Amino acid sequence: IKVIDTTPPTLSTPLDSVLNVSCGDVPDVPELVFVDNCSAIVNPPVFTTVTINQTDYTYTIVRTWVVSDTCGNSDEFTQTINVSINEPFSYVNASLCTTEGEKDLFDLLDPNIETNGTWLDVNNSGGLSGSILDPINIPSGFYVYRYTIPNGNCPRIIEVYMTIDNCFVLGCDISKLKISKVVTPNNDGHNDFFEIGGIEDCRFIYEVKMFNRWGALVYENNNYKNNWDGIANGAISNSNLPSGTYYYIVNIVDSGFDTFKGYIYLGTKN
View 1 (cartoon, rainbow, N blue to C red):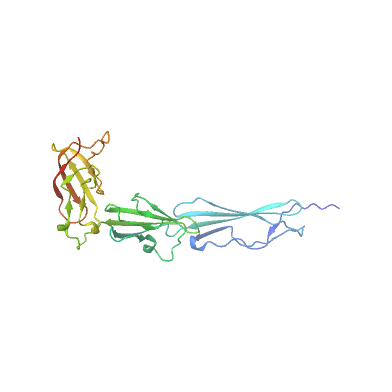
View 2 (spheres, rainbow, N blue to C red):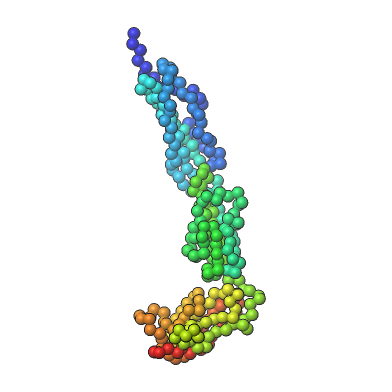
């Protein structure tokens, strides 16, 4: 008598085929036991898991076991876990003065937060390196810094809404402000550049505009670094502007001071 086994292995341990859980309650992969009616040998099951249908608030885990016996019979067992993410997005508000120095943005978050995520400078402020924000050269304004935690059972995004202000420093004595009266860009080390000085320790940002005698704007810089040597913005060549008297406007950003206006003499070979 020849007996042919056509029955695949069966599952002897309980398995929920569908689960609905929150991301913090995703169960571990169970250790399943399979038996076969006609064969004492059941090949090790082939296990796979995939994540599908991912949105900001939900995703689905599909676990699959394919099991076979020595007679070539096989069957497939599946567990589908529908996962909900309770808080996929959150934010914190913060403010920072440009004079305060570097700030670790993790200090603004829950101390138990995972630190293996990534930071993004959403507005390209230029002051973020990893989680460290250096506001010194960032103009006053509103900025967004996004922290993404893509891994684990509870992926989420946290945004830091940062207001950066070049805070007025009471210790800054405006009477010490010095603005150039003459610019002679001849590389002799004297009056080569239009300079604003006297209150460097206040770390202010300067907005500078230069006009010629006919009132035409010839130079503009919203983050001036004492580097104007008489060349017009957008000049076709590197030639300096003609010698003569020019009118300047200096705004000390977010300082509370009035705008400063005056005349300088530009001495060039032109």
